[in-house]
Image (tube, rainbow, N blue to C red; front, side, top):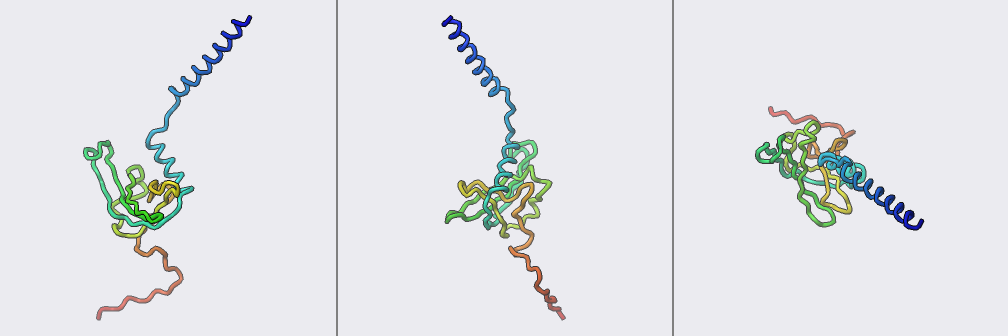
Length: 152
């Protein structure tokens, strides 16, 4: 009687371990693009915003990047807790949101970053963009416009 109980427990444990192993092997793993989107979503929801500067753009073709669609990067820098970070964001999958050729180099921008890991940052995401059209960081609403001087 004791031996059948032992073998029954051993069989149940084997079935459980087999189920865990099958789940680990057969489960759908997120693609790198899905992981990147989750990272962007988390930073948009929880990241702190800080001033940055767009320092360069890079458009690599398929041969240079080793990817079939090429790669588009925005390079930017910001300072957090006295440390200057120079980062790049791959915006290839965000082409429908941002045109890298419209980015103004040297212009101020905003960056969202993880305060626990300041190197983890982004400058544009699906629902948020830190890129600016003008060098003014604050729109001047409510102030009367002055007429431009004429050149007579």
